[in-house]
Length: 433
Image (cartoon, rainbow, N blue to C red; front, side, top):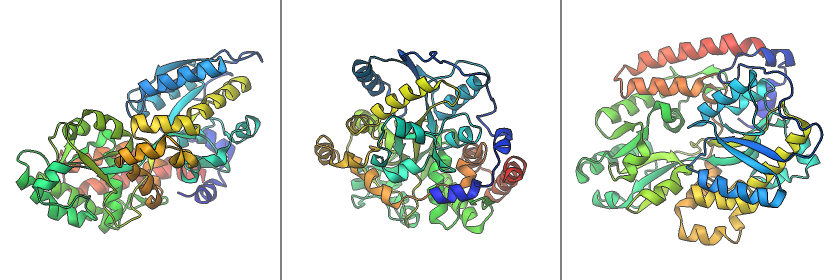
């Protein structure tokens, strides 16, 4: 959704309605200001992270550099194994626990916290701390815009990529590129199966590992989707067709569904993989074969953005908010976003990063990293039913597991998904608009 679209959607939502909105992952309201220093200098901060893209080592390195430069110590807390667990921990803290000063907030968690006034708008802090917000990639910065305010700063940002094993591609006689469409993939899948023994032609993460993010691309390319703004479209003919395609490919053994898709691909047990740009660094270190990256199948634009930003709790002191903004600005400045990108595979979030003196040689040596930067130009906003509807992503992922691993009928499952999503919308959102 564009910034203007998000503003128009929620322009008439009252403050009282926002506070009352029952959204998954943000139920608590907490108590008084937590963690203030009584106006004195801030000597330490706490950052809650799930270390996206296996980033704990580079996060630690960057935090040590921040401590040396600022004199402020940072306690890096592993707040969960994924974005949802971090959101759950943060939600629990809002009900009366100790709040962090900075928290990782994903594409499907920040919005709920913003609606409930749990994270602070950053625009005034940008001005008071002289942060150049215009230096960030516009599309990534505006992903966190709501009613004229920005509620996170881009950090571990990504798009899904198409990864492929070049040796297996060659064995199947395929060109050194990704499929241009899912129709072309349907032709390639049997060739890959015939040429590569027991290796699955493709592996996708299961519903608990964001299959709903990757399938969004498939639904779009078939002309369907999860919703048209707040109109649910799970039972549209085109969306059903996309679901039938996924189910059929799974039943033929051409697309495997795995709870550890990265390892399956990295071990040479699958010829291709849909996965985040944030997995690039890990696969580069573990895969013992040459692999390529490509845009997701088109027609474009059919690629969602994703990943996470860094947010600041609303109920910490102003002094801590300023120190937290200083930390976030440091972690995401041009030099450090380049370091983070090279270590993880996530996209650098600063506009000038592509021309950074350390980035150009890296891109020349690692052309796979260039794919995500180029694909950013053909992305589109995610469907409301996934990112704004409470529990949307998890609900869609579970439904996709049912039609693949569970073997259930697509029409029946998507009808249930349509009804459940509509109920959540009518109960939790529509009365507040």
